[in-house]
Length: 415
Image (cartoon, rainbow, N blue to C red; front, side, top):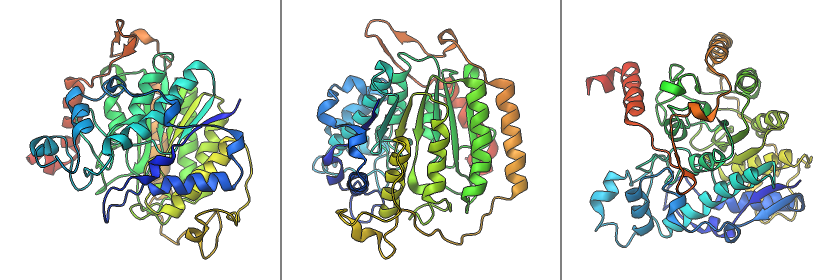
């Protein structure tokens, strides 16, 4: 059974604006490298035209109606007329209004929903959408370069047919939008390994564990700068292995943000492409249907290297270290022209004791609180008329999360 691979050639044409670190052109580079390595014949390649996702109904299963209506209408030409809404929906420097914004949102989101649908239908056991993984978007606002949370929408699709879904995030930034969406349910377990402390989005401490029925089903591992391959594997493998054994998910959504790679423009970890890919390799061994998404990544050549390599991992194919001579963007990879580039000599600020102590603490909590669950334990309800699941993050859970953040941050508490 081939791996589903979503790519639409239009995705690389969008432009966030001068100086903005998010460059959709990285998708074109990654696809070119995947093609140059001869991986496309091993993939079931689909584009937006194959998705059949036009109705706004797909987006309002999580996002509010007025927010999606705004995204579908706003343009650089009319944003002045919609100034109040622009501020209210958190659009601005990080999340600019650019030409074709709504088309961009539809393109990247369609691939994630399509991948989840294919897993549900049993057509594929693995699906890839490198243009997805925009994990910061909230129910009613944009955040962190993210407008529509395709991760959440793909999980909602999986929950139509699955009892338990694991969301696993190896982006350097905390997967806050996804965690918040499922904070009070045991139907989804969210697990994020990320930089914490004076770093966007300033969430994802050890003490965040979920709320109500979701207590224990949120696992966060905050890390310090300089995290390297060896130490990352030493925490990732035992924590995720424990989750898989205790929770036994029926599907996995894995966000593989490449900003945790060494040398990223906005990142501060020191992972190699191979070290990052080791996490994907590890998840394959569980033989659970898996949707793999992109995410962050702001040094373009490293993003393309990372996702091309991980595509090769997902299709069980070794590729040479030399960048193919016929690759359209080969010049980006100079002067070494290698898939696996040299990492920096960055100091790892994560001590062995810090990692050991917190790994053991998380494993203990997982074993105590996490277990396979039935749909009846869900904190959400199914809309039997439309046959879809409508997720609305409860005000109780939001208040509990906000109170927790203020307890941890004296400045917020004073505000």
